[in-house]
Image 1 (cartoon, helix red, strand yellow):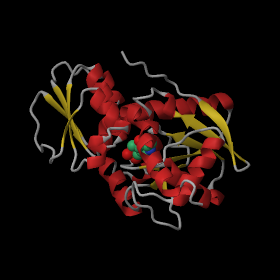
Image 2 (spheres, rainbow, N blue to C red; image 1 turned 120 degrees about the horizontal axis):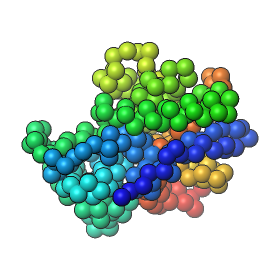
Image 3 (cartoon, rainbow, N blue to C red; image 1 turned 30 degrees about the vertical axis):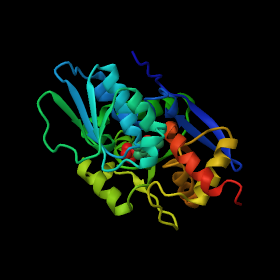
Length: 287
Ligand SMILES: *Cc1c(COP(=O)(O)O)cnc(C)c1O
């Protein structure tokens, strides 16, 4: 049985002389972590005994892929995962999410994913972008509300977005709190569309922050590596794909926040095992 540690703690964190609160959703479980644990919560709790297989797709280093491999193993289901491409380097040197997912028994296919599935196959959209994700994200919202009530604190919430699923359902379930996010995958109009597809009511949409620079997903940026190192030496390891961008955008926008900031750490630290060597090859000792 995998044990998920809930509620996750909220810790005080000082960075560049300012106080933040960090929701440590990276501490749910090492391999079933962060917002993937929240988004896939409904599946973990669902009776899947009439299914033989979980099918999903996305990138070969996806955090969702790793969590799904844990879930499938837990539920004794086959896990078939479709990717458009696996690099030769990764095939020859399995590491990061890819390594652990394969170790959990994932079957990986380098071809288009099946558009129709059989009755005994459960399909999970890329990144867990599904309405049922709200069930687990609502738990996250309630943990935050309980903490605010107990500590009598008023906060603004910030979290990064890929598909936007987590930010959207968090805002929907925190109607009285300002929730800010930023798009790490596409631009703001992509993210707005993602929100809209899940929920038509704009009142439930988080506020999207933008910075002076456009970031392309999974590319390397010196300021992302630098802020990640600085955050780590301040006491917390964040993920390099989303949070390193997120902190830069947050700091660029720091004057708009009305209250102390509660930053949601959404896990994904195994993913750093593939991102960090890339950064080190590019920037280490080359300042
Ligand atoms: C998946 C992921 C995100 C993006 O979550 P969405 O719900 O798709 O917006 C952000 N941070 C980390 C660490 C993730 O793994």
